[in-house]
Image 1 (cartoon, rainbow, N blue to C red):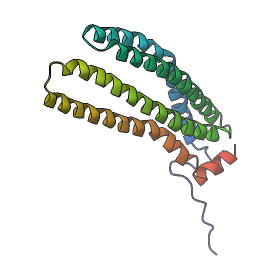
Image 2 (image 1 turned 30 degrees about the vertical axis):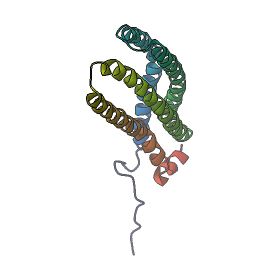
Image 3 (image 1 turned 90 degrees about the vertical axis):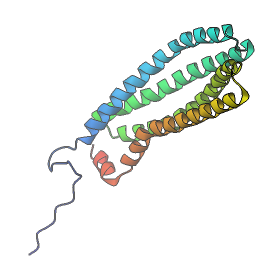
Length: 197
């Protein structure tokens, strides 16, 4: 007579005890949600420092019209991103709380957050990169008055590489947790566990 083989269990799961991943992922989502909300609340304050920096650039020879255009775009992007990413952080916080309470809608809430984070974060990363290019052009315009054409061209290339490298790294960093959540909550053992709640 053959003995029945017990069903496979997830690594780290003790038979008869509840799985631990909802608590771990819930705490991560809760903490990051709170930090995201705080960042969104504080980020508009940085505009005051940028105002001072731009005034100094005008005093040192930057074109006032370009600086003013840059500041209008910067203020608009900062406020829209603060509100948008703040709302996305609220979704993350809500999903974390639901997961901690083992609410079956917690998983889908975090998947919705993941998609929103990738879309909103990607959009604002690209917009920020465009503004960084304008700021670098302003800075290079000021510095270029004392440099020859060859030196200015080399500095422009270095700046381009730094901006694009920063954008690529930013996008990878931005997508890491959302992609993890999308994959995690699509797994069959995870869906079966959530169905028991």
